[in-house]
Length: 248
Image 1 (cartoon, helix red, strand yellow):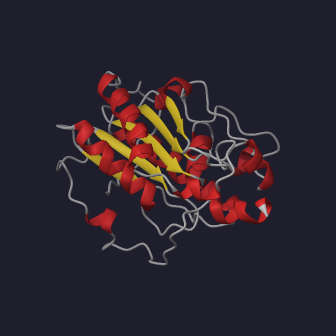
Image 2: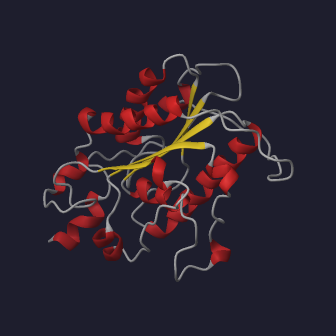
């Protein structure tokens, strides 16, 4: 029974089939600033079976984080990946997140980034922080680990319902190892009794990332952003500046 529930419960209980479009709620959200370089950029990867965008937990996290960053412009970027039960496609999310992080670091040297995700999305963002390609994975098929200078641009990593060793083994996926450069600024938020990220047996808890749970992550992210100094500009030649393509 547990084996049959894992794939379903690594995504939210509420499913949606709407496609990504210019009229989606996250795309229509007004900018806090007209500048292409915000003070803070939040990159969020949704969970399995959630419609393109932020998903329920991601929207709750952003809504909780904004007032904690009063006076600062905040830009939100939903990670573009299938978020399907075919977990191998998570590499699309890792690649999209890595490209976005490197682009922001190159083009907006004073922007502080917050990386976050829920369930499968938490696994995606966890792998983004990895300092090395997991054993058994062909390095040519995955993005290279982020350079230290790029990692310095990330103020906080907030992972909700991160699949634990048991869940990742069941899914036939490598274990998530947070890179040393990210460990001090990472928090893993696990709802009480959630078996996907903890030792509980209440599978419904994985869908229970309510305000109280999400606020824990928002408090951590805000404290990191508000307490972190502005990162210095990248040394010349560290990254070739890719084209700027910012959208909410």
